[in-house]
Amino acid sequence: MSDPQMPEGRDSMPWSAGQTLALALVIALLLPFVNMVVAMVMAGFAAAQDPTFDSPQFYRQLRQNGGYLTFASLAANIVTLWVVIRFIQWRKAVTWGTYLALRLPGRSGWSTAFITAVLFLVASQVVSSLFQRPDYPEFLQQVYASATPMVLFWIAVGIVAPVAEEVYFRGFIYIGLRNSALGVAGAIVVTAAIWSMIHLQYDAYDKVEIFLLGLLLGWLRFRFNSLLVPITAHALINLLVLAGLASTVA
Image: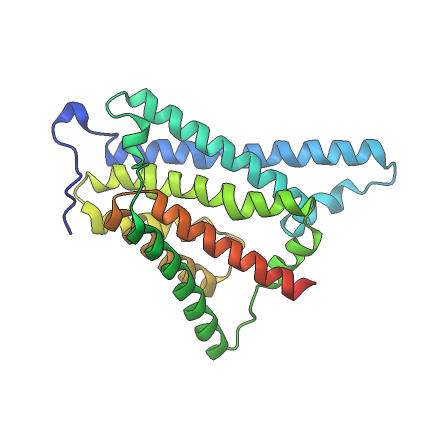
């Protein structure tokens, strides 16, 4: 699988594969500190307003706390976007708009993003029913039930997270790996694998599903040479899942 958009000449090349993975690791190591700051701030506010606030219990239940996950997701993803753009600017070889392929894909790109999102969700539901899996993991239902403010939760999960994750994986990491010996196919597979592994809250079945979705998103990135296509598909999937959660939890 060759890529016609691969830049020519050393001066026009983005970060190498090794440099890309090293910089991506910096971001990955930074995010837990961002999450910790959000948790500490929220705990501080809660303790100031309620003398009976149980801090240990608050920290034990963070993974099911929709309010915390709303603000932690917003903070972590905004930091990710900012740092990725800074790393690209630091390289100075390619502008960040070109590096991230922020170009309009045309009508076929938008329609393919929509069809991919819908077909993936339908296939996911069919396979889950065959394995007698719940429609949504229990922890995800708990998160949604406790999310506050709900509008901000939808924005964080349905819009901000897809944009940041696609910029990070199918943008920054993909470009660095694509221009290495891995090529396009290897870059798609590796980014999908890394993306699935960072979803620590999910079990092995869900991780495989996330990996397969990562392959689809990577193919969309390659097929249309535009990051806007996988961003659109990713956002549609997240928004449709949120809609399903809303009907399940309500």
